[in-house]
Image 1 (cartoon, rainbow, N blue to C red):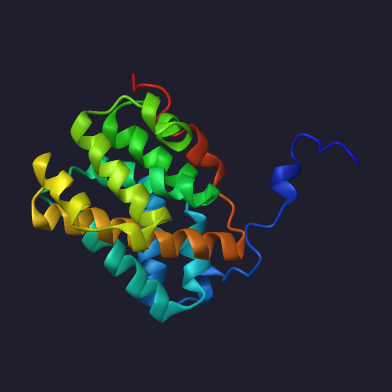
Image 2 (cartoon, rainbow, N blue to C red):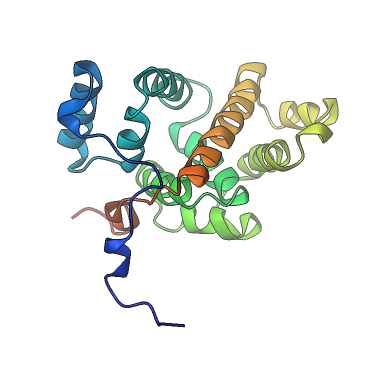
Length: 201
């Protein structure tokens, strides 16, 4: 078997399905993608992939925004913690890499995403966050076993009903996202691998 050469990753397709050209997209989607590019300096591959089906793009990102950008309850870093831990359990490279980058930035901790993706027990998190992630992982991996005892354990850690709903909804939403990414073979952008690893000067 031939040994992979440096740079081979750049030759691999970004996904198993064709990605649309920006100029061919509906105006609202094209404008949203260009705004993301302006802010981050690149276009996350998931935006281009989902843009091939405009109605699903709009629905996906509306729900994503409702779950991940809301104020109050879970912190934005905690929301990303759920994504990284459950995406690792689901074997989703794209979501672990992309949301690991976002988590590093939001938590201001360059170690945390890698810890959550490999060994939750060694992660630099609070007992409350550990309970949150234990619940999310059970819901991700053994959803039929979730019962009132798990909800009671979360409430004992101070989580209210709306926060528990958010934990479950984020876990469920990204279970779908993980499966779409694996279906399509979506590759993470190279930029994600480096984001948030070094403190800003």
